[in-house]
Image (cartoon, rainbow, N blue to C red):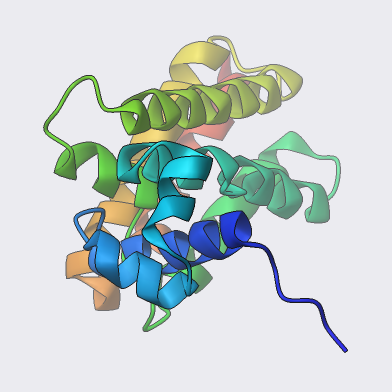
Length: 187
């Protein structure tokens, strides 16, 4: 017999699924119905929908997933970074792909004080640190700038694949990432 998750976890699961499929403007009633919880639980655990959205972003394993992909590729920093683009090719060609949940939330939420913006920033900063560390290990002459370049490529892949998945933007970005990685061997 499996134990049903509590209301807090059910709210997170429902919001994670629905906001990815329908966007952050999905109605509270839809989230409550999917989670099978009372409105009181939303306010008790998250203070409202804004807090729930921020918590969905904070607890999503995005950065950890990048690290898993790189770790599975071995110890060579160049191959670790390029493996990210190979994985993005798989992810972005799935029928269920809807883009980057962080960027989508950031663009959809006009209120600059919305707590989701801080979560998006923390996520992107974490990715920057992750890639800068890989580039440092690879001997890149400017790992911070190289990490910025890789993040621009990743963001581009995730945005472009929403509208043109058949163009395989991850493959194009991978080729460009190779130039970024190879910069360290030419200096």
